[in-house]
Image (cartoon, rainbow, N blue to C red; front, side, top):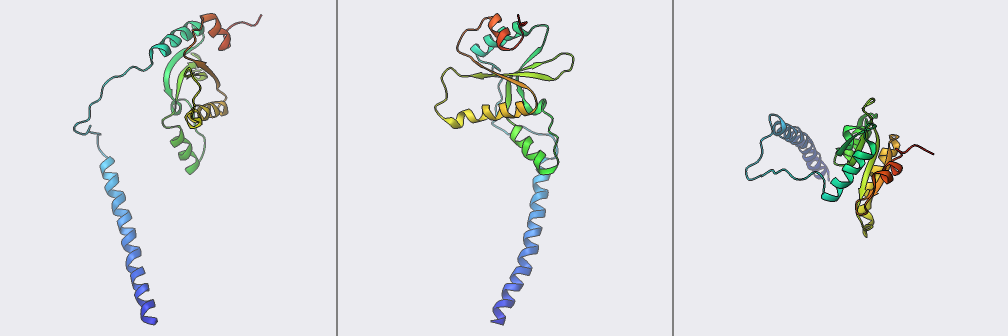
Length: 175
């Protein structure tokens, strides 16, 4: 019985430092790969692609006309570029990871304050049959509302007039 305990104890004493050494060395190896300039791997081809689809571009141009002289209009803006995350440690990292790949379809930026005051999100013609597909847009809306940014969702299928967009976006003067 005592010999079995000794062998377990010796195995533990050898295994723990070996595990720690392995973690330290593997961390350094990963860190050394990331240092230095990024080199595109062989066989990878990058091509330019359209930023907006045809219907989205039409809607973008109409929105530009509706908000001219009031806002700058930017397309496909990453949320992390205009949302400041004020948190400490792991909470900040978690929020930034969550924001990493999410974008605003159109951001309306006040030219004086240079802040995004309103975001326009595009919605496809038919409602999504999969509720999980609608989750990213709801998450984006919740984050934007938390930051005090108005969110307007527009369907890309119907044809809007400039006057309708002015009303929807809150640009028309109340009568």
